[in-house]
Amino acid sequence: MIERHGTLFVVSAPSGAGKTTLCRAMRLRLPELAYSVSVTTRPPRAGELDGVDFSFVTEARFREMLARGEFAEWATVHGNLYGTRATALEQALAAGHDVLLDIDTQGAAQLRARYPEAVLVFIVAPSLKELEQRLRERRSDAETEIARRLQRAREEIALWRRYDYLIVNRDVKEAMEHLASIIQAERCRTGRLRLTLPDLEVSE
Ligand code: 5GP
Image (cartoon, rainbow, N blue to C red; front, side, top):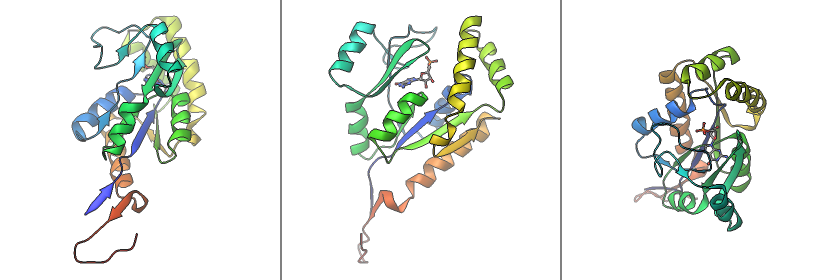
């Protein structure tokens, strides 16, 4: 019998690095992974559903939740507020579920401090040029917004050493293999397990 507390996997990447596609693909690859629906003051994009992609709230409501200490981490990203609710996250981990979070570098640092066991993964596009091209292909953002996101990408990439793992996203399939391998390897770490075999005395 192997018992395990859930592991928190935190994935950060500059926008356009392909993180959302990757996290979506991971849901199919490892369906047992739990996800947290972030709270944000950003307006929904076309096709985004409230309660599924994000919980979309007003700034007043966000600040109310913040004052009540409801967030495990929160940050201002591209002028909007984003946060992860602590209760649902901690309940999932305590129940032994691994949780994958897609959050920015400020939030990742807060989670590292709050949950030292968390595994932090940073995703980068192969080059800034490629990143810019991906941002343009998205077409959901205006020119000034693209410039803002590129500047922020430079600042975020500078923080890559704070993460446990780095994945260069040249190809979604390859990047997904790397992320799945990281998750599987972390699940096997002895420090995360309690082992009890019925026919063998095993010390802790
Ligand atoms: P977008 O609005 O483009 O979906 O996401 C913008 C950025 O916000 C991304 O870098 C994403 O990882 C980050 N983000 C999404 N949810 C959260 C959250 O709950 N907390 C933090 N700190 N960042 C988040």
